[in-house]
Length: 187
Image (tube, rainbow, N blue to C red; front, side, top):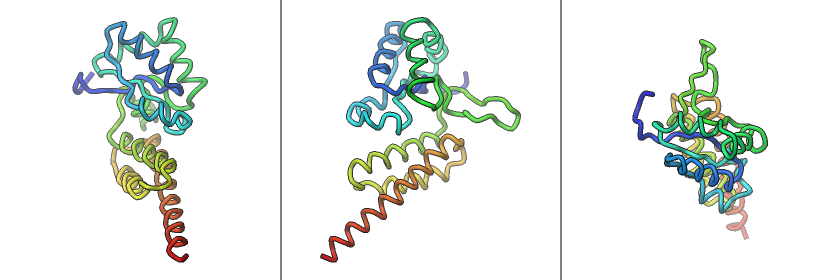
């Protein structure tokens, strides 16, 4: 693998926090340090887990191949892979986010990482969805993030969809907040 072996990459996305925590326990019992960067958000906004693209289980790039092998083993890894691929998410599974599309040569360009453009798009969508929950308090910020994500050169179709969703939610949210403020001021 090229790049920094200490880089954090997404192994799998799951629809349920307990499944992600169990998988992390299994990985750590095998000596692989794992992370759930979406853990707090998933615990607080459990009803949005599918809308935000699932709960990421991440590992260091150097451990990615071993972690994929654990996912293929019978037991928890098998259940986690099933949960990610069939029941919980229609989105990509283990290490399938970056380069999810097939390039012009028909070969998958998947190295198990998420490009900076896709990461920006995913973040903008999460902020836009959380802003809905916060009654539009951060829609201008999510709008800014969405526009910035759409300007990234390494954006895949997966990231572009998320950035467009964030843009639409943010524009509608900003319009709604503007209407509420205008109505309040006219009283």
